[in-house]
Length: 482
Image (cartoon, rainbow, N blue to C red; front, side):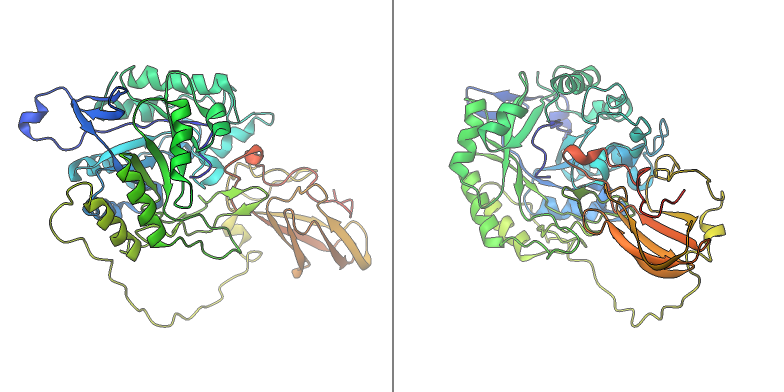
């Protein structure tokens, strides 16, 4: 995502399908500083890549999306490995079904696509807590994206499992950067080509570039291309030009209009970069969907929606767009496009009207929804204290006094994260919302049931606010409720 400015990115190139004669040779991938290019198996190489996140696309559609990317003329894809997607509970890894990243990588290999892999541990990506597991917050004073031993969790399993496939060559927490770098090296070897990616400005590169790693930049179609690559040249006087994240669209927030970027503008900028001999990764080529509760949020608090369409060349549903074909025409000028028809857009069906039927309210279904029963405490506990990272938590108490006149119930320090639906004796009283509504008025008799259904709308994925606890001890005040 566009926030990937100050953290290490691993660009990790996987073997494509080789014929028998070439498979006899040892594969290699390297930086050629004299010729200002990459070399793959000794030959000059330039990647034209697109970002696709397997975690945002159901497994059944992976092949369709990858084929469409291949038929657009791409020779590589880029993807993240979200740590929290694979280790939702400490020590309990899940690499099956939609989380089978090994299968996804093998599928790309079979189709003929190289893979640029970014395994984190922090990824941003407009993803819940930037890919960091919420259970890290069990340590209250944890400093995320740092060299804190808990944050420096060993990602040995996903890294070591990927090693057999790789191509080889030979906020700034410097110790954290070097810890991650050493972790990569210990599992992947000294030969793997590692990159960093930063914004196309000297201040970003000064803060984000790491000695011994190749520095690249990212920028969108409205940027000054010459100035952007001049910034990269300041950090890397020689070597390949690389735009690691060329933005084909932009991210969305709840309550805002869908972001749209012109196909003509994207195609024109891509053409200019390829004409300069640059390597380009398009972010995103397909955005996909934030299923479940995996969406992130930005600060000041603004949550991402379920859709991660990104106005990408392939829509959230994998449909072909004008932008897709515009990009394909540009790529045709620089490399041979695979022959054959492009897989069509997915057929759509009209299911007609769906009649909704009310079954139960949340209050009526508590015994089903909370099968372990209520947790009693003097003060509100965080979601993490309750071992529930996502979704909703109902906080229930009673009015300590009779409130004949409207009486403030407040969350003065934004203790409610992110939205609380307040009711008295089952009657809606109002909504408390982070940074927007920190006080509402309630009325009722002493002993009336006060419910506050708190919704986690997604943890912040970038910046100082990523230590995003949901509900604090000071979440509710004003009525002196205990």
